[in-house]
Structures are given as C-alpha cells and as structure tokens.
Length: 441
Image (cartoon, rainbow, N blue to C red; front, side):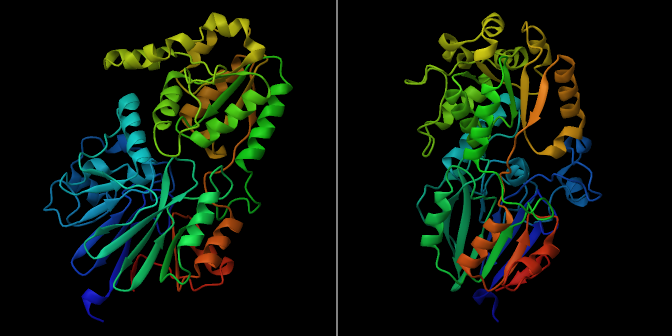
C-alpha cells in the first residue's frame, strides 16, 4: 500500500502503562500527536518524579525515556509535527507541553486551557502554549490530511474529549479518558449517536483493568453517601479531593446542601469553580458570591494566600472577601460546615478550635495514601482527633462501560492504551485486539 493511502499509528507511550500518553498519527505528509503527557510511573513501577531530572537537557530527557522519541516535536528540533491534540487537563496527558516547539499549534478545549492557566498561576506549572487553538463542541476541523471531530466525554477533568479522526477513508477513535458514572454520562449517549459503527481502529483506555471488576459508584450515589455522613456528625466535615475534580466538588456541594451545611472551598478551589463557570458546560457550578448560592463560603489557607500575594494576585482573594470564613467563624459553626482541605494546610487546621471529633472524607485513589506527603498529611489529621472515611469513585470507565464503547463502535480492531493490563483486552471484548506500539491502516 502506498504511503499516501495509509494511516500509520505509533504509540510512543501508553501501550503498557497508565499515564504519559503520547500517540502519533501520520497520513501522507501530515503528522499529528494525541496528548503529550508526563509519566506517572518509572519503568520499574515506582512513582515518577520530574524533580529527579532537574537540570537535564531535552536530548538527555529523550535518552532517559522521560520524553518520548518523536522527531520534529521538540523546541531544539526543526518542527515537523503539524499539530497536537490535548484531550483534557491532567498532567499525564499534557504535562510535557513545555518541551514542544513553540511553532507547533496545540488544539484543546477552552475549559482545558483555563485549567492549565489556573495550575500555572497557583503552582508554577507549565503555562498554556501561546499557539493554543480552541475547539468547540460540537465541531469539526481539518489538520492537513486529517479531519478531527471532538466528542465530549465525562471524566474527572472538566471539558474532557475523545477524538474521531479520519483520513484516507479510514477512521480512528481515540477514547482519551472517560467514564459513564458521572453527571454528564449523557455525553456518551450523544457520542454514540454521532459516531458511525465500524471504526477502523479504537484506541481505548483501560485504566480500571486489573482493579475491582464491580461497576463504579456513580457520582450521584457518592453524593448521597456523603450527605448521610454529614447528617451523622455534629462536628465539621472535611473534604480531601483533587482541587480540579469539578464533578466531585459538585457531589459534595449537593451533599452539603442536602444536610444544610455550608460549602467552604479554599480560595484555590473557589477560583477553579468560578473560572470554569464562565466556560461552556460550567454555567451551574457553585462558587462564593454567585447569586443564589448563599450557602457557599470561602477560606484562605496561609500558604495559598501567601503565594497569591507573592505573585501580585491578591485580586483573587479580595474577589471573595464578602464570603470569607475565618477560623473563629469555623470554630463557632463546626456542625454546619463542609471544609475543603489538602496537604500544606495542617498548621491552619491546628488553629480551628474544637476540630477533634470531626470527619475527613478522603476522596482520592486509595494508592495515594501510602505515598510520602499524603501519608504525612493523613497522619497529621489523625493526630488532631479527626476520623478518616474513604468515599471515592474513579474518573475512568469500569468494565461494563468499556464493553459498551466497544460494542457500540464495533471496531475492526481495538488497540489498548492507558493501561497496565493490555493482555486483559482479548478476553473482555468480542473484537480483534492488536498489541504493540506501531500499526498501519
């Protein structure tokens, strides 16, 4: 088959691991990259830490397999990649963008760009590329030989997308990260109505393979369980969740409202909710000062506020000043509050009188509990007399949802990605599964 009548697929990273996703598609003279993520694990399975590679050049990072070996992608190379598509704002899908050549266009949703900007502001993470190009939903756009159709999916990152990609009379579907048990599960129903069955290749995530095979807890059920926990306590409810997991924040807001508690995000989470409320799909998000949301307050942990002061962004805490909860306010209203906390706030919590007997709801992956900073934080919380309850649901598709995608899209082949268990695919799906890193259609 002639080169210009073929789509070449190269999985530079992600065929045998979760995180660090990077897929290259080539049709004719057009090359595009799907995600350019930071690894989550080292080859030996230990947790990846970018700080261990501080000071190394880009070439050295490629040699050490930190950066995937993509010719024409990086700032020290002559650019030959036509575009990058970012599926969502998790670092394992965008975290290496700062090494990309600045002349290469990067396509993402407005919500993803907003989250990248917030992360850069609060933590010094990489800034959104100057050549960011927003796509809307529904939409379709062209990159050389490729026609790209983004499809909204539900995930633990706001404004996440899958991509349907066509060239040379072939179709590839890249699932990105998705699930069906969140609040916008209906997005998948719309997706299935719009995508014709019989895709030539389905690159489908399998994060949950190898874990509990039971159907995932829905966000609605999680919210109901959280409300019961709130009602059973006459002390504070503390929430430890990912600051950008908007669906989870909404679940806890519903629980707070149902149990007549004040919903009190820290200033970072408040700003995330506020900023995303101005993006498509975020119009109903709660944040302090929003009309009709008098039960939403905000608190100002020292380290966060100090960070904003140092970068001359005190306009952010001033924005929510009328809704501020002081530590004295909290001590006087322990039975009425739901307070968002995370590592780095231990000293603040020590100055809230009467916190002993309160409950922390831990709403993150169980595996983080044994990792250094998280373990230290949880130990500090226990030392304050706070009880810890785990209440979490994954941001990824359970096995029934994976089967639903395969059976609906009816692919000619399934290509495993974003999984530690690619060998499980063949026994789960009634469609040909191709293993490896290079394919042609």
